[in-house]
Amino acid sequence: MDKKVTGIIAYISIIGWLIAFLAGDKEGAKFHLNQALIVDGGMLICSALTQIPFIGIIFWLVNIFLFVCWVIGLVAAIKEEEKEIPLIGAIKIIK
Image 1 (spheres, helix red, strand yellow):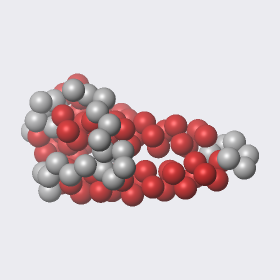
Image 2 (cartoon, one colour; image 1 turned 120 degrees about the vertical axis):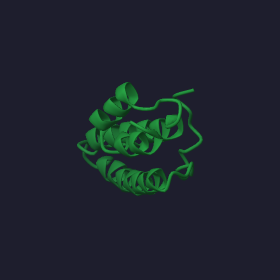
Image 3 (cartoon, rainbow, N blue to C red; image 1 turned 60 degrees about the vertical axis):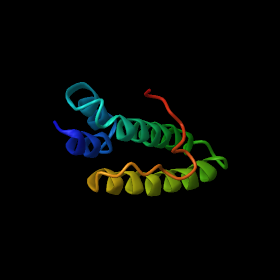
Image 4 (spheres, one colour; image 1 turned 90 degrees about the vertical axis):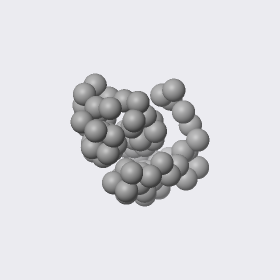
């Protein structure tokens, strides 16, 4: 897979991220692999925490924010731009 396809597939889900990481152009799409991992991981954690009574409302709102970040990242991957996601885009997991 080339850089663009790898970046797009990385945003699909955790499984899409794994496929992009294992079979895609890791060096070319490293930026989007990192951004997608942060968003997908955050959404997974927030989805689990929304089950807690009362506190779950806060995580539900955070999950909406992460969904907006996911859309921003996906659009940037489609346009082949390296645009950081707001607030959490500076976190680097993959170096």
